[in-house]
Length: 384
Ligand SMILES: Cc1cc2nc3c(=O)[nH]c(=O)nc-3n(C[C@H](O)[C@H](O)[C@H](O)COP(=O)(O)OP(=O)(O)OC[C@H]3O[C@@H](n4cnc5c(N)ncnc54)[C@H](O)[C@@H]3O)c2cc1C
Image (tube, rainbow, N blue to C red):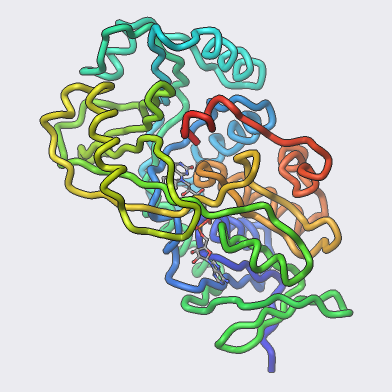
């Protein structure tokens, strides 16, 4: 007999796991997650763990404030230490950049509940000892932004889902979803078919393939994204440091490694090979921003696949014509930070039928209506 579920979640990345966890917490009993590979095998275990509310679009800022609040209680909620530190994100600004842009970001953020402030160069150097001070004008800073350990979050979610009776099927790719006349969905997998009242498509850059079988077109494409980690140094840099000038994002992990990225044109495919071109550009850029890095050895480099949408924001919520098929994909490089709110709002929709006001702007319909959530400044500089 075909196994039946209240909700079938496709994809065991952070979006799928958070959604399953929140559904079970809200009392939904029969929840299953289907994963084509192993749990967390996608971007969710390849990222930098940065959590910020410093964005430049009112809808995104408000969503991130909600998510940041959720992260604060996540260790308690999961009964598992997610190693979340709130020491801020610092956006450095140099003389050859436009300070008005930074002022505009702060204004937008302050108007939408984020208390970002301007730091003078001395204060910047206190947060980031060793930063290049030549031409340093200051920085935008928000102390409640932070960094967490993505593997700890994934582990905590796996324990919580299983403890609460949820099922996770690894190595079970969903090849097709069909909607029956009775409104139930059938999921086709090599390990048999499964039925569910609701389906959540949390398959990142694979989401268009699942949705297209139901006649839904998702504007999501894969783009490679790389990171580099150094040998560990004594811990001294607490915030995530971002340079729009160089397109750099870098932080020091709790074990002392510097983990960073620089912007470079990357292929639009699922290629996970780390590239020499990236390593060379990163070495050039990072030694301009943090000159001491020229003496630090690189020990690791890896790639993951971003799932990009035209406005660099995810598609969240029920499909326009199929209310029990819900998309949670296209996170465009900042999905980990959004995930507790994504999971909560999707679970709320499934249990109440209500689309949360914070999630509504992220609907698929926004593209047809010409209401994108564009953040030109950040995306042009490759900081997403
Ligand atoms: C290098 C890098 C750095 C990043 N840094 C940050 C950061 O600092 N902060 C931040 O918030 N975000 C960051 N991100 C982005 C973040 O990792 C993603 O936004 C987030 O993990 C997306 O989660 P997801 O669950 O949607 O996708 P994924 O983790 O990719 O999960 C999707 C899952 O679906 C599975 N799947 C696909 N198709 C099927 C199918 N047909 N059947 C079953 N399973 C399927 C995949 O195997 C995968 O496990 C970074 C990403 C990268 C690559």
